[in-house]
Every structure is written in C-alpha cells, then in structure tokens.
Image (cartoon, rainbow, N blue to C red):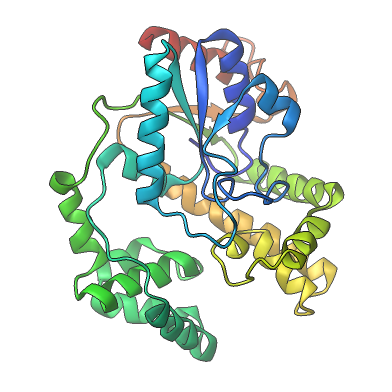
Length: 316
C-alpha cells in the first residue's frame, strides 16, 4: 500500500524479480478500460513481464464497487495460490484493502434518483453543505470523510437516504456479516518521509501524464461516448481534464487543480495508513527514489526494497 506516486508499482516489480508472486491491482481507476495514462496503469512491456489482475475489467460507464473488488480479488487470490504462487496486492485504494481484509456488510445498491438530489444540493450549495448534512445524520462518517471527497460523501449520504441506516451502522455489522479472507494478509506500506518529497513526485508524475497524452486520452473517451458523470471520469486527474475540455479551466488551471487534488488524495491515503493496524512501514527517503528504491538512503540502512524483500522472505 501507499499514497499515490509513492513508488508502489516499482517496488512490486522489484519484488516479483526475486519472489514467486503475481500481482493483483488494488486501484479503483485502473479497473476501467481506456483509463490508462491518468491511472498510471502499468504499460504493455511491464504487464508482459509482470501481469496484473483486475485491470481493464470494466467499461468506464459501468460501476465497480468495493464488494465487486472483494469478490474478484478473492477469486484471483485462490487461483494464484492453487498454482503455487503468492498473491501480491498492490495499490492505493484503501477502502478496497479494508473491505478485503475485514469483509463488507450488505449495502444498498446505487440509487440514481437519490444521487441526483445529492448532486443538486452540491451544485446549489457546494460539497460543504453535503458534508454538513452527513455530519447531522452520521457524525462518525463525516469525521473521517473529507469535505473535498465528493464520491465518498455522496455515497455515505445516499446509503442513509436509501436505507434509513447510517453508513457507520452498516459498517459496524461487517465484522460479523462480511466475508473475509481465510488467512489474514501481511501488510506493507511505503510511507514517504517528507510531505514535500511526495508533493514533488505528484507534480512531476502529472506533468509526465500530460506529456504522454492524457488530454488526448480523455478526448478519445468522450468521443467514444463515455459519460462525464460516471465514477471513472470523476476520478482525480480525469475530472480536471474533462472540466478543461468543457471550458471551465485554462490548461494551467487544470494542471494546478489536478495536482492539488492528487495531493489531497495522498493526504487521505496517508491518514488511512496512520491508523492501519498490523502495518509494516517502509519509510522512503529522497535517496531511495533517486536510486529507484534499490539503494538505502543512509549507508548503514537497507533500502526499502531490501526491507520489503526480507519481510516477504520471512513469510514465504
């Protein structure tokens, strides 16, 4: 696990060169076909060397939930283990990791009418008003969902308006109602030592995405008829490019807003990690990245790759 742009894919590739592992992607954007550049999806040469499960499995207009991920991931895990290998789950979608580890209670399905009313409230009064409404009915969920996280805000309020039960109450049931992994997972996370370092990496990576043709990618998706209101197109990076193409932002504003949104997402991911139990942290320094994770930041320390490799070798 780890925040966006922290080097998860690079570390996974290194581990797969030394261990009999197969990768399962834990990324809520990479599941969608055609969302390649903006999701930092592994390119064709990397996938040839290191195939990834659970990418390119949905059309961008199709919903994909945490429950879908749990079902798909459990099948992939079983298949990998039956062939004598070890599943290596890699990504930054913390809710997916939590759902897989702890199980999920039954949740009400998406309700387009309820979602439309919540979106109308957000358009009229801003997402802060949606957050305030959620705080009134489910203060526990409101405390952990950031006001700048519209998808989770919308879903939490939708659950309450649809079922009459709060998201918090339903999640509390998951400890007994949810179907969990038969064996608890071993958990590793990259945690950059400096926030400024992660911010730099986020900005550099988004600029690389723009150079690789992110705007053209979004244009192609829109020309193919992908709905701009689909969850896929509301993900970080894609949402800002859509708004640029619709004339809401200049190119410079789009870039800046996408980088800010990525930093906010990274902050939320690191908040999840700080409260995650049973987690083995790999603290990444600037020198780790300069050496592509293979050389320690300090001479008398091991690189985060060496730390991760030693951890995994003890397990298998």
